Amino acid sequence: MSRLVVVSNRVGLSRDVGGGAVGGLSAAITAALRQNQGVWFGWSGETTPQYTGQLSLDRIGDVTVAKVDLEPQDVEDYYNGYANNTLWPLFHNRLDLTNFSRAYAAGYARVNQRFAEALQALIAPGDTLWIHDYHLIPLAAELRKLGCTNRIGFFLHIPWPARQLFTTLPSHEKLVAQLFDYDLVGFHTAEWLSAFTGYLRNEKGLEVGDDGVVEAFGRTTRLGVFPIGIHTADFASENASEASIDAQKRTEKSLAGRQMIIGVDRLDYSKGIEERFLAYEQYLQDHSEAREKVFMLQIATLSRDAVEAYQDMRNRLDAIAGRINGHYGTLDWVPLRYVNSGYRQDELAGIYRAARAALITPLRDGMNLVAKEYVAAQDPADPGVLILSRFAGAAAQMKAALIVNPYDRDEMAEAIHRALTMDLTERMLRWRELKAGLDAENLDHWWQGFLEALADRPKPCPRMVRVGGTAP
Ligand code: GDG
Image (cartoon, rainbow, N blue to C red):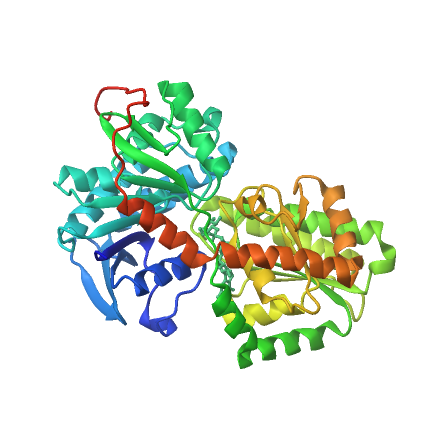
C-alpha cells in the first residue's frame, strides 16, 4: 500500500502523552496511520510572530509527525474565526452564533494555502493524502494549484447543514467547489450526505450516481458514507486495566449505593449540556422518590475557551448546576457534580462502567464517540442504559438505545426514569444489540473502508449531469 499522509488541524500524536492519542478523531487517525507507516501533518498549536513555514519533524513509532507554527492573526482568523466562529456554529444549526466576516474567510484561505505549501515538501508521488474536517476544506484545491496529482480524500467529522442554512454562508458555492478537488468525500451518515446532495440538486441541478460519483465545476469526485467507530478490542483491554478498575471502584465508593447518570463531552454548545441539566432538574422535580438515590456526573472538558460563545455557555452551566444543587442538595447529597477537568481514557472506561445510565444528548453531532465508548465499557452481565439524542449521527446505528429529543425536557426526564428502573433482561438485550453493532462497524472498518474507496479513483459517469465552468 502507498504511504499515507494525514492532515488535520491539530496533530493528536505526541510524546507528551506517552505517544498515545486522546480523543475521538486523534485515536481514529492514529489507528489508520500505525498500519500504513505514514505522516501526520498539522498546526503545532504554537504561534510565531512571523510565519516561516518551517516544519518541525518528529518520529513517533512508525509515524512521522510534521507541524508548523502559525501567526497569531492566523489563529484568530482561521481557527477561532472561520473554523470555530463561522463553520462550526453554522454546521451545527446555530446561525445565531455564526459570524460571517471577510477577515475570517481571508484567514481561512491564507492558512490553507500556507498548509499546502508546507505540506508539498513532504509529499512523494505515490502517497495517498487524507485530509480531515472543516478546518481544511480548501486544502486539496490549494495543493492542486501547486501541481499535486496524488489521490486526496476528505472526511467531514461534523454534520453537513441543510441547504437553507448553508446558503447563508457568503461563499457557499466556493466551499462546495473546493470539495470537488478531492477524489473522495466522506460523511458519517446518510443524513449528512443527503444534505450535501440536496445542495447539489437544488442549487446546481446535479444528480449523484448510484456509485456516489458526481461531476461538477469541471471535476469529478465520489461521495460516500463512512460511520466512524471505536476500537472495541482496545476497550476490552482498557476495561480490564488496573487504572480502569480502580476508577470504577473509587466512583462506586463515592456513590454510596446511589445510581449514577453520566455525561461526558467536550464543553460545547452543540452537546446539549444545558438542556440535559434542565431535563435532570425536571426528573428530580417529577420523581421525588428518586431524590438522594440518584446522582449525575457531568464531565465537560474545556475547549475553544477563546471563543465568546463558549465562555457564555460556561457561565450559564455554572448557574444552572448551582441552582439544582442549591435547591435539591442536602447535607450529604450533591445531586449534580459538574467537572471541567479531563480524565485518562482508561479511567473514563471505569467511570462509564459505574454509571447505570449515560445521557448523551447533543443538539447536533456528526457522530458522537462517547455514546459508543459508554456501551463498550459496560459489564456484559450488568450493563447500563444509553440514552441517546436522535440528533447525534450515532443514533442512525445505535437504535437499541433509548432515543430522545433533547429539546423535549419531559421526554428526557421520562427516559431517565425508564433507564434507572429498567430490568436486567431488557438492559442486557439492548446492550447486546448495541455491542454487536460496535463490533461490526468498528474503527478499522471506518478507516479501511475509506481508504479502499479512495484507492478506487472515481471515473466520469455517463449518467451524471455535467455542470461546466471552473471553481469560483
Ligand atoms: C468530532 C465530532 C465525531 C472527552 N473527555 C475526555 C476524553 N474525551 C474524548 C471522548 C471521545 C472524544 O473525546 C470526544 O469525541 P466526540 O465524538 O464525542 O466529539 P467531538 O470532540 O466533538 O468530535 C463528533 C468526532 O469528531 C469523530 O469523528 O464523533 O461528532 O463533533 O473519544 O472519550 N478523553 C479523555 N479524557 C477526557 O476527559 N481521555
